[in-house]
Length: 356
Image (cartoon, rainbow, N blue to C red; front, side, top):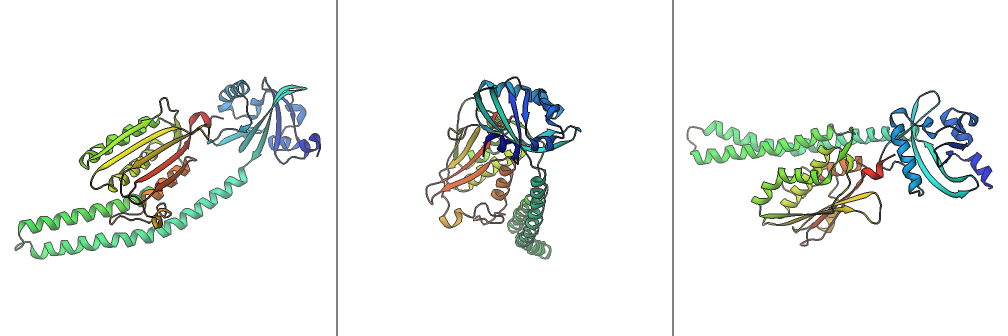
């Protein structure tokens, strides 16, 4: 198919922009998407199609793109929006193709796709998944709560019946047992409440080193008491990631807590972080322990809801951690062998890769 025929028939909105950021041509689909006839757009700055609040940032992006041009998706990790002639905005995905030395100079072709319908379907699917998950989780919560509540009830009844004759030492044992089981029930409910409020929030720049320092501040004393040596091996000047610092902090504390529990006799944890050479604009964060490891049968289930190998585990920690990482457009993976420790690796897009 000749170029002109493809340009006119393409299902994406195609916009050709010169080095100065001015539009020199659009295809019919772009006219439909933005509500402008071509003659109104040609010669205008591309910023006319950008929401007002992001125009300054977009202008900087255009200059930066032509300074180091490459064909790539735009705004990796961010939700992008475009602006129609009537002022309304709609969500888009954009890919940029650089064309050097054409008869009209150096150009960039922006392919724009309206993703409104897809996002609506994805949102509906997520709601349905959440409803189903909450139902499954509620059944699991009821089952898990039954055990500690039975212990609390039986110990309390024993105390009420035998207070006058029971030795103080036995009474204290019962009180401690009630306290432990109440804590266990509380942890189960905390996980349920965390899940029920888990949703996308306004993200901000998060410094990875600061995040790690905070997590170790909270859990460091527990590590020292457990005779676990924690070391950090971070590349210098790591870029920030876009995210919810509180949610990411919970993920780190969960991974560190799991590593601690895998080494009841002490051991070592090594935290490493750096940029991915094979995936520019992405950051890797790993938590490795020298613990007992995970069996092959369990390895594929560790992120399943309500799955746990701990006697007092709720089966929510890693499942929630994966959901949080996925909400940050990242991934979390696990490697382990029995007796050889475990490594959890998180990858996240950095702020630099998320710029529009």
